Length: 242
Image 1: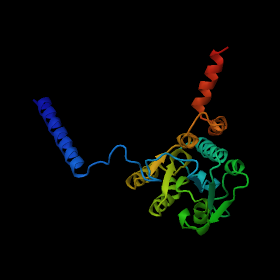
Image 2 (image 1 turned 120 degrees about the vertical axis):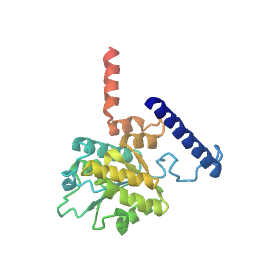
Image 3 (image 1 turned 135 degrees about the vertical axis):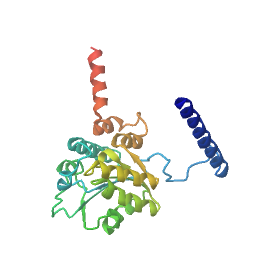
């Protein structure tokens, strides 16, 4: 009897959800499937001609507190993303908060990957509130802003929220960002989702901007991204081809 009652309740619940969804669909009809998404809409793919990469607070001191991702992996991912962006000719804006204080300088692996790219020193918590950072982004004339930061819920999320309010199309790179606990990671992701801001990963962002494997820069971009599984597949191919 208990099983029968449970099944009956489940069927009833599904019926309510289905009916509600149907009513919602009537009330807010979806646009025609062939309707073009507006320029810069979050559903559009990243374009190398319209993207700028913003790297916020990848600093030695902050890295010591990161707990939600392996530090070696975090360094690998943000450096790979920076290298791929450089190869593709995508502008990169790097900023650090009080690097002469307790948070320390930008990790040397990142500055080595971006020779000639200045690190903008700021005191504002939200990078977008700093006039120099804002000017560097706006100078590019690009609307798609790819953001990675430490910490995720502050250094990446705050500028993403304000950039969207300013008419830009921000995306946050999850595995090129880091934070200090699983709770902070969850809070940051929930806030981004509530605001409708896309979250991506470093390798997906790289190949999305590459667009085609027939691109002359494709081989270098894949080398920059250094995806471990791709390297393993290449090794297997070479091993079995002998």
